[in-house]
Length: 208
Image (tube, rainbow, N blue to C red; front, side):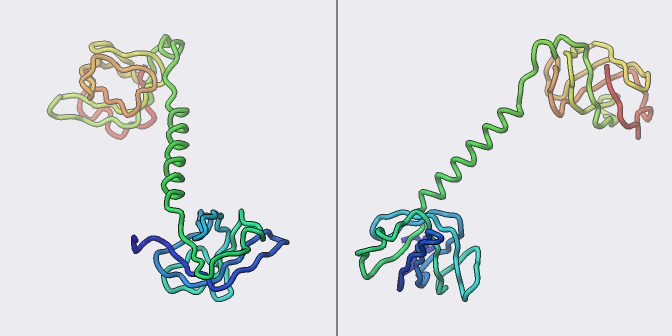
């Protein structure tokens, strides 16, 4: 058995009708357990761990050697009858794996919702880019503009106008493509026609 797998030997059992908690007291033999997780009794019954009581206090976790009481849900008073004398409780390891899978699935759903592709209307609108940074690339003799394209499409060799009135030609895209379009994030556009130092320290630039 994995030494990190939680196992607790049970010394006493009680049921609290007012809270619907089944209370199992015992000693942790191995591993560690946290609240709000799933456990399984040696008779095959599953339960949800709501609280852990240690030294009369409510704690969030317990480890090997701890004398604790588990407050469990999903067990009835009837479920606690005729239990074996050598009853023990284990962590349901599949629960952790399933919870991680579910959390990843929910995360991916949120990412897909946020990662909405541009609509035809947005692509048809005039080019507009929010520039987050502009720095001089000596080897290319031009400024590299990075940011987010809010609308439209921009192609190589097209001329753009910055919000400070300067004009420049699109010389290269940092990803090697021939164009960039709406909602491309962290796009880099190398421009020519602006002298070194003219954009240094300039903020809140828009390219159109």
